[in-house]
Length: 442
Image (cartoon, rainbow, N blue to C red; front, side):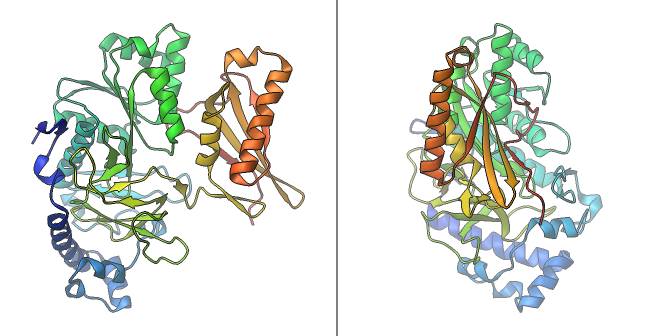
């Protein structure tokens, strides 16, 4: 392991990253069968669900039998808070992480020592896929603590052999100075915080394009391909989309390689399905639906058919990088982030893509949904660049009109556009707040 080369591509774990598809499927079946035996014996929740559905672990004889198994949803984790879904005794756990619980009861996930070692190796795979080497300096600006981002990226960089700057979130101007003074070559954080750091640097005379920084590893929140191109232009970096979620492991479940043609999901550890979110039926490769993940090697708190609520599609055709693991398309949004405005389904990322294509506006925006009488209203607040802010009124009105027409054409709804002065929308040290829904609860 550790930086072996195949063709022009460097891989961290060449054997497992390039397994033939047939061998991958055999390995997945073996691990799925073992997983079913483990959870049936050790997790009362799953034993009950299996019994209710009339399924025994011995009934799983092929990967197609996966669809016979029950789904797991986030509410199941909340209902079993804190340790109800652990598959090993608590004293065998090495670490726990937890979600913030801002939308309900916090979700606690447990890791054995082997889980942590696997996590570090998978994060190292991800970083290697981006071109990170042991010679790099990785500035980690994800939050540390119960959030999985900081420690996940930290352990991955150390497993790869790179030097880590554990900056965490906040203190943007100081972090911009650290990026300059310590010579970081890799920045790992949420995309919105990366832009916040870039702004703080520009305010203090630090141009990221003049720094040794060359790679960005951004995740933790949805972001569009248009935003990726914008960040690369502003910062002079190669920006990569990393995917993960606390319930499954944390960051490191999938990432886009240097080909930027979808994000590789590590199939020797995770079994992915795409389902119709309304019916639960499996969809074929290429069709967009809800991503469902089964953890094949997780010991502490394994999950079967976990509904992520993320919308994407699967591409299992070969990638030019040489990795054989399937690729997910850039996330189209989340089923629970979808806004229904006057009967029309609208995803925040659709609006973000349109904003990024409009000259004179910045990537900082807020979508405000409200109700006047019985009518839903949609307002898009977006900061303009300093240059546009100082332009004539008719120039601002032209941008408003252009954005309103674009949103009407592509999303099918009429939105009020409010152009905001630079730095007027509140920044976040972690995940950005992109939607404010003021409609009364039913």
